[in-house]
Length: 112
Image (cartoon, rainbow, N blue to C red; front, side, top):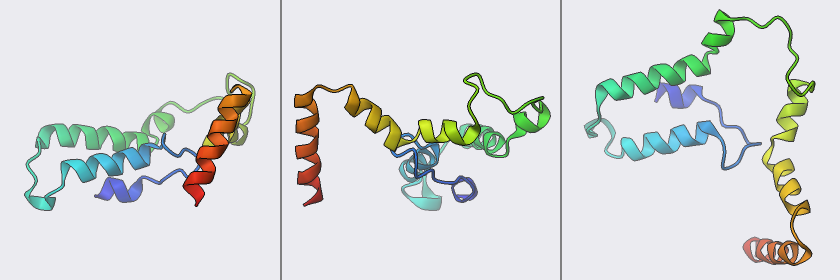
C-alpha cells in the first residue's frame, strides 16, 4: 500500500498509466486484504523493483551529462506528445471519414 500511495497517477496517460496498473494489480492480488495468500518473495521483488523506478535510483546512480533527448525536444514537449489527448487526435487524423463519423457517434452516445 505504501507504493500505491507513493506512485502518482498520470492523468495524461489514460489507459497507459503505470500508477493505475499498479493499483489494479494490488486490488486483484489483495482482494482479501491481510488474509490474501501471496508469494511473499515475489511480492517483495516486485515492490523493490517498482520502488527503484519510483525513486529514480538509476538516474541518481548514473547522472546524465545533458538533458537532451534523441528527438531534440524538451521533456515537457515529449510529455505533451505522448499524452492520451494528442495520441487520440493523431489516430483520428489517420482514420477515414467513415471511421471518424462512427467514432463521433459513439462518443455522443457515451455522453448521454
